[in-house]
Image (cartoon, rainbow, N blue to C red; front, side, top):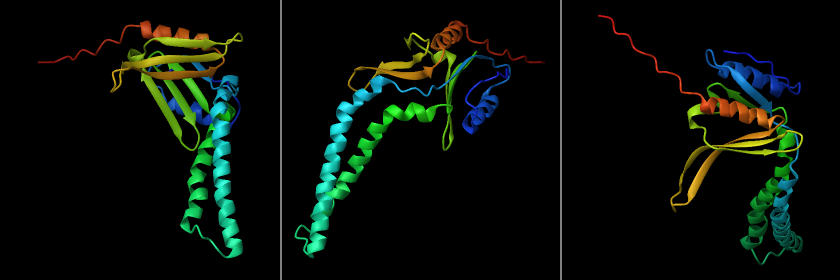
Length: 211
């Protein structure tokens, strides 16, 4: 097992990921490349606001109308709508939560900085993430398919690796992907992936039967 030096933001999450990688690596497994999730906001992610803003505004208005109706009825001592008046605020609350989630999505990379580590070894590709719990996703080299790289002029970017290509229940083409990024050296990531994808699989051990 090769124990690489992994420069990163100095925080408890990064230290936990370093220790997790040490534990994850197998005997004689070598790290060819690694990259930390960058804390950078992608301007394209704000395109979701075209839908998220009106969704959230409508949800707030819906809930506000219900809350105002309940408050008005309570103040006057009359509530002719009964339980129906409570449906508006109760039904609208989950929609407000969904809207808040969509509005916050572009800022997720800021939260993930120093908490997500991508690694390419001579056997597999890994993603290690820490939050409330440690999450480890690994894909062996023999499952790696075509790659799609999106690279910025400064060398940062993402790398999408196809790990399963098939058809859904309607017969439409369906691709399952493992995504690396946003990382600083995306070309290095692809070179490391190309190296293990082209390597022949290790020979199976030969059993020796003694008489």
